[in-house]
Every structure is written in C-alpha cells, then in structure tokens.
Length: 369
Ligand SMILES: [Ca+2]
Image (tube, rainbow, N blue to C red; front, side, top):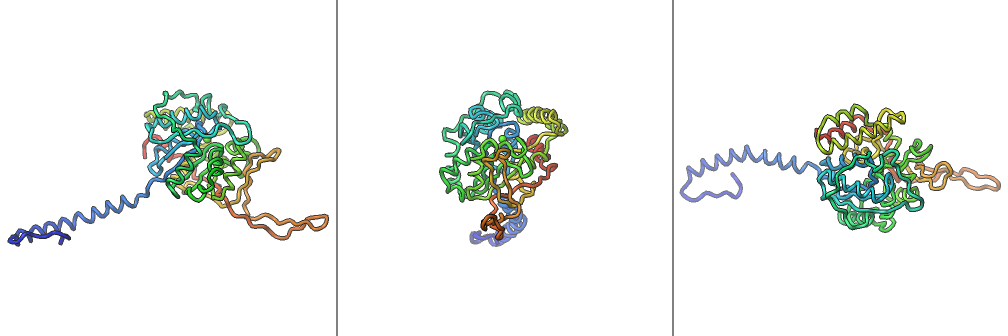
C-alpha cells in the first residue's frame, strides 16, 4: 500500500486494481528513485578552494585545471607578485577567468612586494607577460575591490573548515592573512603549497623559487600552527608534460585547450633548451593533489625555512626523523643528552604518479573526461 493513499467509498474493485497497479509501480519505481537519490547524495560536494597565484605559465595551467574539475569550487584567485609584477599578475588572472567564462570567480589583488626583500620576476621562464607571450583578449571580468589577504580571512570565516588554500606563488599573501588573523589557522581545511624542496632547489643548490622569493613569509606560513601540504619542486621536476602531450592538446580545438597548448608548447620548448625532457608541472600538481590526493605520496615532517644562510636562504629544511639532538654544554664541550621531539608541521610530497597526473590534466583541459 502506498502510504497516505485513501480510496473514495464505492470504488472497491476499481480501487483494488488501482492499488495493485500503484503497488506494482511503486515496487518498480521506488528502488530506482532510491538509487538515484543515493547516488546523487553519495557524490561529495565540491571542495571550496582559493588559489593564491602569481600567473605564470604553470599557474595558468593550474587555474584552468581547477576550473575544469567538478571536484573543486574555485571561490577566488588572490594575486601575489612573483613570476610577474603584481599589476601584470592581476591582469593575467582576470584574463584567465574571462577566457574560461568564469566571472563568478572572485579575483583580488594582494601584496605588491615580498615582506622583506626586492621582488624577483621570472619572465625568463614564463615569457614577457608571464603567459608565454600569448596575448589574450582584454578581460571581461572585473577585480574584486578587497585586498587579497582580507578576502582569504573573510572566506575562512564564512566557510569554516571548508576552504582549502592553494598557494602556488610566493607565500606573501598567506603570511599577511595569518599574521593579521591567526584564527584562520583552525578555520581552513588545508593549505596545499607549491613550494620548497627537500632535495635541492631550482633557483640554486638549496632553494625553490616560491620560497626563495619570500623566505620570511614562508617561515611564517610553515610555522603558523596548521599542518601544510608541501608539493615541492623536486617532485614537480619528476612530473613532466612532454612534446607528446603538447601534440594531444594541439589536436583538440577549443579556446581554452588552444591556449593551454600554446603555453605548453612554449614551456616544453623552454625546458628542452635547458636540457630537460619536458616541462615541470609544479603548480598544476598542487591543484591535482586537492582533486585526487591519491596522485601523491606524503610523509609527515617538520619543515623550517632558512632565512639567513649564505648559500641556503630560502631552503625548506625538512627534519625526517621527528627530533633534534639535545646538545648541552658541559664545561668546555657539549654533550648529547638525548633528543628533543619535533611535531610535524607539513605533509611533504615525496613522489607523484606522474603518468596518471598528466592524463588527468590533458583529459580535463581537452574536456575528454
Ligand atoms: Ca606560480
């Protein structure tokens, strides 16, 4: 019997047939409705993310990957100077969301320079405008008037425990946000940083570019009290997009994949000139880690940022053992009196499934999956 269904009086036979039909219908339809409802509710809600970016060839690829991924809801892009100056970065970010037809994504300017040093830009790697010299149309989307770090703070409070920050540039904006409001440490869901390295740098022997470009900011962010996820350059350098992938991107004609194909062509060509077999997908790997954490292997470590070393400024110094020796002065010498335990503050990426990542990237950009 269908719950809540009553028959009018004097319609017993017809009513019985009707009830039978309804019962049969309900037997057939209700399980289907149940399955549909269950499968819809089983889909996890998209994760809210804010991408803090210095766009940037690989930033552009990372942002478009995020905008093409149903697992993510990109709430905002906050712009930090790095690969390009702040004004150029803001223009690039607005052009990217305009290209994607996504003026619903907030784009806010942030810091204008690193906390404690001069800006170092990277047109050498990213082209004169930061986007491989590709001249995208004047943006239709407009900037949000809020200051990037303020927007990060607002969003963390508006969506407690839901926002994942994905900083893919120097950590200046994130440091400003967490310094102004340390309360966001317990409110954000995760901080997935593209930056650092535990096996040598890409600027010099020690430092990775995003950390090197604002080491003081990075030290604040790593030691703010949250556990960050660190996707370093040493893994990015083993996660390459190659000429074969460029060809596949070129074969698919749509405005966004055409644009990414041009970026990838520029980026791979630049990397080949420097002797690499492909281009390091630094920033897209950080975004992909949020889309599918099974793409990477993470190990808990305590990470500090060297801010003073003559040869090591900007190095992320990772303690893999979880303790420091406790050396105590005894007269004219020190003695080891045991160890001082260290709490991990980072989940450090030590490996990626590069093939599966590149497939995901190409499929999403070309709209294949
Ligand atoms: Ca970047």
